[in-house]
Image (cartoon, rainbow, N blue to C red; front, side, top):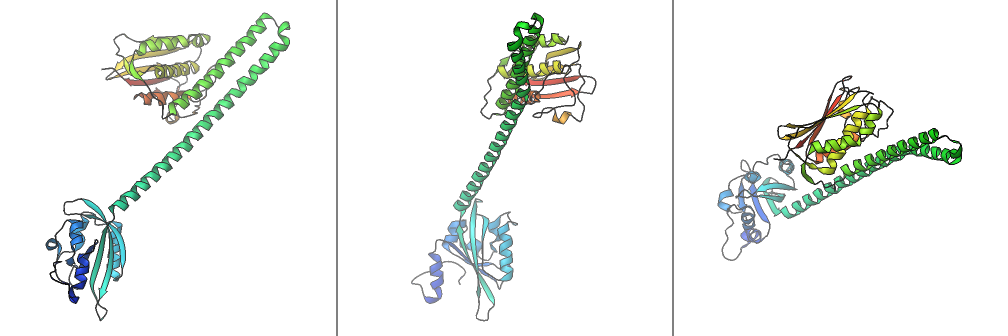
Length: 385
């Protein structure tokens, strides 16, 4: 085989192979196994087109220059083993053209032996399979996306089932009590005193509020998990929202003789937040603070500026939270060791809802507490510049 690809005139038998190679669409190389480092002694025009290297720049060199920095790729391990054993093999390699661009080369190597059976040449047939590799990678990515989407769908269905189970379980008890109370009122209404009737009506009202709380918590938890949830972030006066929420809970606090204190200086800037989500966050934090506070204590709500944020702090005088319970504080259905001080109901979803909504509003929420000293829940939201 000559040292270059140049041919002239009609092909003669000794040059027939070269003439055939020159007209192939695949790149062809011939390496001399009798010389150190197996240099290339022939490349065809298709190889020049494929790699961008002219023949005079590659003759006499080992073809590893095509590998760039990719010296440990799996295909090369296969090629080296093939060369050591003197056998035929095919491998896909990452190769680099003269201009540095990557292409995927499907290389087929075939050994050539002389009459005595000695290995003298290796012929390499190279084919650009970049489009095939990129298509396969796209299919793998698509498959990974489908697997991930299916996993997320299954997880979402599981979360929904859990929410529905909790709702059904927690609604069962108050519904049973309501039915029982209504049956008593229906059967014995004429014999009940006015005080007794008021007691039954009060019980029914309490149970109805309890059921509403369960339904709201489940709906808000589901809403916060929805990928399609769109928040309308706008300038919000958190002090004003705090006053509204405290009015919501005025009767709840009065029933336990709990004082509600608000500190919200007018100098505090507005927060960039979603109007409804802020109300839900404050409602859950204040409700929790009252729920876990002892009779005669104080719940404090502060709104203040903190660097480029607006901070909300809700502080109670309850039993506090131990360090071992902090990691699960904002989890779904988390139930801590502390119990509501007046037997109030808890779905274990309130703080989970808070965490979801605050995160969606691009804020942060955390708690500071030590057992026996109450708890402080802190929300930071971006302030309006």
